[in-house]
Amino acid sequence: MANPWLQIPLADYEGHMQSAGVEQLAVLSRLFGEVLHLCKPASVAILGVAGGNGLEHIDSSVTGRIAGVDLNPEYLAIARERFSHLQGLELHCVDLSISRLRLAPLELVHAALVFEHAGVGLCLENALSLVAPGGVFSVILQLPSEISQGVAASPFASIQLLKPNFALIDVAWFRQTIAARGFVLSQEATHSLAGGKSFWAGCFARDL
Ligand SMILES: C[S@@+](CC[C@H](N)C(=O)[O-])C[C@H]1O[C@@H](n2cnc3c(N)ncnc32)[C@H](O)[C@@H]1O
Figure 1 (tube, protein in one colour):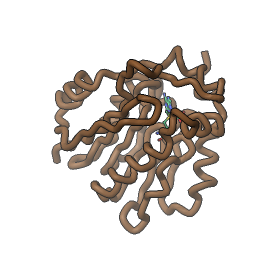
Figure 2: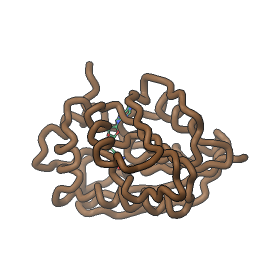
Figure 3: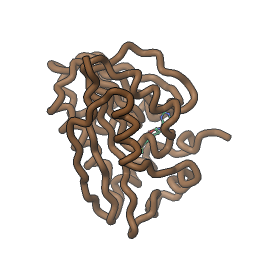
């Protein structure tokens, strides 16, 4: 069966993420901006880049290589159009849960709300193998909430197609799994959102 993300127009995804009671798009953008500011990477990969949310924070004088990855070619076409001015932008259409990424490693690998959809099998392997020695793996996970569903209701009905393939990732399990792969948790924080949800954001440093 085709991946449900291929049936969701970017306008629906972004409309949903900006809708009253969801309001996550700006938070995701800000959190990515903060990681960029902290790490000042010469190269960055964004897994599940969608339409390029947050790429406006890239400082081209610092970051010369930007690799965005997503399975939806229409999202990537829009990202390419929006950020055509960004030097060093490369966009790769890959299903991270099915295909192995073959890219040169990058100093920062950022994955926000991707593992909930793509799982932690090959997608996680792809993420870890992309982090250069001495680099950072930055992750944003959605936390469980008693008052809000995994995929929230909004006027954008197509988003509900994502429900069957959506699974929260246990943060304690995630921390342990990444630590067992030789990464060290360098910072973590919880961010409360409108609508009762919250995100966990963590950065893991890879040894040289
Ligand atoms: C919840 S969105 C997160 C978007 C983005 N990180 C942001 O800050 O707005 C998940 C994104 O991951 C992409 N995605 C989902 N599963 C994927 C997979 N298996 N391989 C590649 N991309 C995937 C979707 O197409 C979508 O753009």
